[in-house]
Length: 184
Image (cartoon, rainbow, N blue to C red):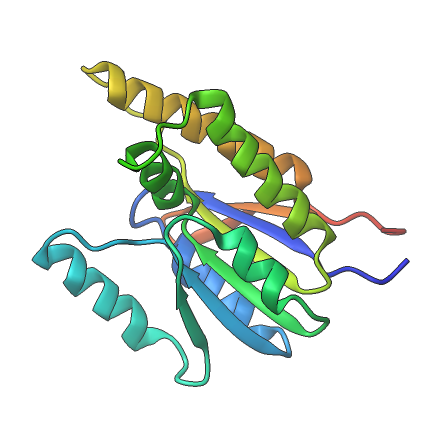
C-alpha cells in the first residue's frame, strides 16, 4: 500500500485564529502548498477579506478557487509531498446548500462531505481542512439557518472522525483535540 499523507482538521469560532494556525502549519511542512479557497465573495467586504487572506500567504503557494468540488482538485493534484489547505468547510457547505442548479438534500450534501473526508484521509498529500464551530450561539431564528448550523455540526464531526489530528483555536491559541497515534 502506498504511504498516505496526514489529514488535519482545524476548527474554531470566527476570528479565533484557525486560518492563521492552519497556514502556519502548512508553511512549516516541506512541500508544495495548494490553498483551496471555497469563498465566493458576494460583496465588497468579502472581497476585502479575501484580499487580506491572500496577502498574508507566501507568494509561492498556489491558490485554487474551488467553491463546489475540492475532491476533484485533490484527486487531480494528489502526490507525496503536496500540501492542500482547504479554507473553509463552512463556506463549502454554504455553497453546496445554496446551489441553484441542483438541490441537494441534507443526506446528499453530507455524502459529499464523507467523500471529501475519505479522499483526504487516503491522499498521498497532507490535507489541512479549516472549518467554523457555529453551534455555540443562539438557536437561529429561521429554518434555513438552523439546517445550516446542523449540517455544519455534522460535517465537522465527519471530518474530525477521519482526521489524524484535530485542533480547535480559541483566542488565537490552538488546542489539540486529537493526535496521530503511533503505528499509523
